[in-house]
Amino acid sequence: MQIYTKVLIGMAVGAVIGVTVGPKSEFLEHDTYKVSDASSVELFLDRDDPSSQVSLPAGFAMSFQALEVVEDDLEDTQGQTHRVPAWAKVRFRFSQKLGLYDSAGTLRDQLGHPRTLAWVTVWLKIRNIALPSGGFTSVPEPISGLGDQIVSFLRPIGTAFMRLIKMVIVPLVFSSLLVGVASLGDVRKLGRLGGKTIGLYLVTTAIAVSIGLACAHIIKPGNFVGEGARASLQAQYSGDASSRAEDAANAPSTIDNILNIIPSNPLESLSSGNMLQIIFFAMFFGVALTLLDDKKGTPVVNFFDRVQQAMVVVIHIVMSLAPYGVAALVADVIGQAGLSVLSALLVYALTVIVGLTIQAVLVYGSIVRFLAKLPLRKFIRAIRPAQLIAFSTSSSSAALPVSMECAEENLGVSNAVSSFVLPLGSTVNMDGTALYQGVAAIFIAQVFQVDLSVGDQVAIVASATMASIGAAGVPGAGIVTLAMVLSATGIPAVGIALILGMDRLLDMFRTAVNVTGDLSVTAAMAAGEGEQLAILTKEEDAADPDRGFEGRLKGREHPVPPEE
Ligand code: ASP
Image 1 (tube, rainbow, N blue to C red):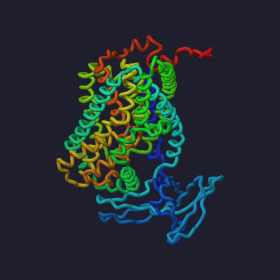
Image 2: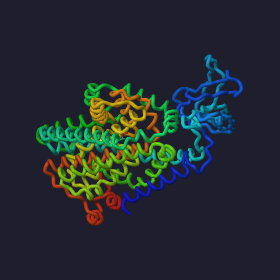
Image 3: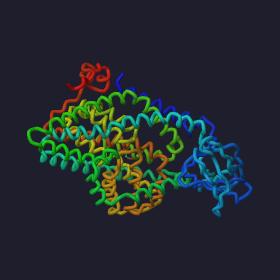
Image 4: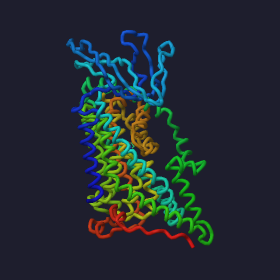
């Protein structure tokens, strides 16, 4: 079975686990309250004594298991009375000893114990928010404790897979870029390739945001969100939204961003994995090696060439674990989101997905067909492993090693081009992210009834294009930079609360598009440099065990003899 078939099966299994036995599962009892910031909930040592209120440190996220729920009668906006949970006696435990302070700042109690992980019991006051259409929604939201445990149990498998794949990024990018630049041996050629690549990246991103804006205007997803869903989404995620807005406000300015490309200490850039700095230094290093007299640079280039080859083998080994890692990652995401968010934001999500499909088919289809001169269907088949890893990890950086492998092995792009264009793309080119920001901005403006002028929309295109350059290729980067895009046009940043619950799911789709964009531009650049691209056929893949993802692992090991 091909690796991507196995990865697809892994994704499907993960999705089924997430929906059926995840925290938001409809089949399991919802006996736990999940709180993303404990300082936003009210906790009491004694339910009848208001002065016994205590607080936990801000940013303290945890789940409270409900032992007992006390209900109350409340009248909703339509005059109907409902029996709703008002208090929950909750139990939780943590590995840190915490002091609980009351509003006067007096230490009321010491909770927990680092060694015993002692259970702590307090009363949680449940906020019931009246919905304009009738009924209530409660904050914090009840989830299944068992489901939460199941996904927490699976989470380390996904995390291990993510870490394994990320482990390869820095050595792979550094070594292959250095070797690529040294083998190009021409600084002017490099400059030209760089200029064309960045130009095409910017154009595809600006088109992507415009497609996003157009889809949002035509479909008008904001009009489909009911009053109730709006209030509940906002109440549920408002704490998270303000922390995203704060992150965005602390982001460095454009000039600092540009200056930051120059590393002051390349070893630090390598150890922190700062991709643009690594690219900058590897290029300088590679060029310098070609400028040394008498081919003195050759041993160094050869050394890094071997490093790169070994990293490719590591990627092959790691990819054989992909189906399990992917199943765990998908179960976690789907389990956390739950189907209720999906239904409230269905039209919004579909708008993003329609936009992403248009971008992939029209924009990348044209690039692949007319610039790279490759058949689109075969191209998609060749890059599928990279798309699947991007989709399931929601990280273009994590998908980078697999993208490079697809470009070189499956499309026939030279190492010189792929090692330059793809790492650059994984940080600066995020068409899917930019498109989603366009849809999200208009969606939030529609929900809050903010009128946007043509100038505002041009500002959205410009700021989303810039923001996609600044965003890192990691899960959730796009929602942080969305706050910057919103503030450029005066759309309320709290609107992010509306879409947060859905964000992680859409992140999967937009990351797959980000990576598809990088690979399309890479193919176009290689063709532009006069390379003969040839897509690896199924037969060639099967016939040559040294190519493709499966083959190499089945090859024999060759022990490395020590130097004489
Ligand atoms: N997860 C995306 C990526 O890595 C960035 C984002 O849109 O959040 O490409």
